[in-house]
Length: 332
Image (cartoon, rainbow, N blue to C red; front, top):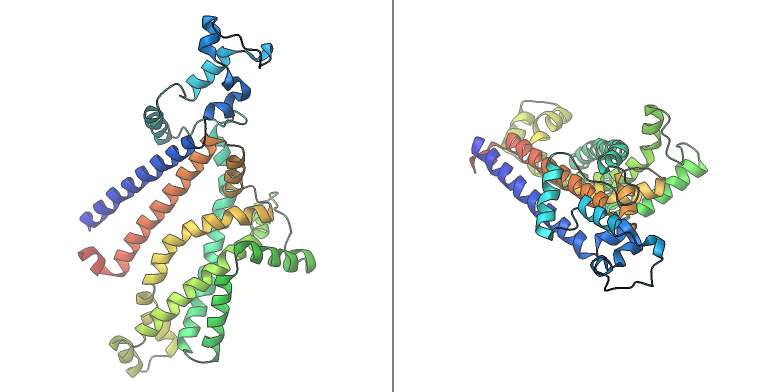
């Protein structure tokens, strides 16, 4: 087991290194970050102005502040080569220093701290919705395999998988919030209860397509498990069908669902970018869209790093859970 965990930890750090390097390189390929910090001052030829060889007439004399440019370069390490900047950025990230936003000079850690709770609650609620719907749905579909309920479930699940998040969100918002007024149409942050209640529709929007995916996997695995000898033995002992299903067949049928659970985190985070825009949720998804539009590189890089760490750590935990469900994984 120790060797299994060690291999996964090494892989975890390798993936994180690759993600951070590619993310940092991509941000620097998009343009000169100095332009987003000092604006038109980035066009100044400070070396020429200081040497007296350049007479700049395109920029207002009041804006010719090469000291400001030099201070900005020093603050954001823009006077260093890109590899050195990457190492400095990575070391700062390791200590929890995500830098300062280009737009408002606010520490990025504060920006994330303000936006993260809403997104975490939303993603947690979405997973609860997906599993809460998928498990009983998959069990009943497997129990009534190839009957009317199972066929209807197949149509419904493929329908949910085919509907994009933004379309499902708009339909739910119109029907349940605007027309029938069951749920609030806007995000509420007055109290924790109000916050959770206002996130029900966004969570359902994210969770239902995922529930359809879980249901298809669970149904298939359950049908296979129900043909195993130990299930036939339980039936021969006269155990009730639902007890056999939930106590004996469900656990060994959860392998595929557990595997997809980790991978689906990325899909949920991607979906939250759209859902938070539709429902006006001030979360991480909405913040990264705003940061990309404004070329706020420190915020974008910090959120990308946060998402990567979350995704990789969750998949690491899923690997451990998978090894607990199936000891043969540890043996390999």
